[in-house]
Length: 136
Length: 106
Image (cartoon, rainbow over the protein chains, first blue to last red):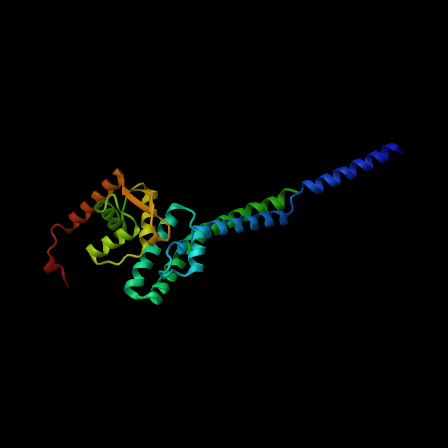
């Protein structure tokens, strides 16, 4: 009788322990959202738009997205060049056409940013799927 | 190794503008000298390819307000890059030699 009770107690203990130790996907989602929010706030601080008071600025949303995505030196350099060309085109072509041209260049740069991210997502997706299938 | 036309142009511009060769200055130099309007994306793709081949080296420079606080990516040609560029230009020069321009036109 005592043994059974002990066994039941141990089982209960184990259950609760595994329950607390298990990491739910929601935890990861929560952490990811928190990280993204912190990242967005930090990048917004250093966004180029805030450095040119009064002057016409590039499309803010696109610039913000590109600033967030340009994590490597090459992408940062390219984004800087696009911004520099925008400043020049505002004087020669006007604000409207300069903004349109900025969108064209920005979307092209966005593809460069997204392409490796997608490749990485597919790779990790395949690995996660393999784990889920073959490891119980 | 073979070099494409844009790769040749970028390498030559990087040599000519040394040590101030970066995306916009390279594009401006190419346009001024050849009349070809190269896009920034095209130039950066060429820089990426050349860097992978070991013909160019890049370093981050200073940031300016006109660039939205983003730093410049300066490029410098390497010794293998210079050698390949010379070989590539010599190959073109040797192809040009002996052409009878007037007779060759249909």
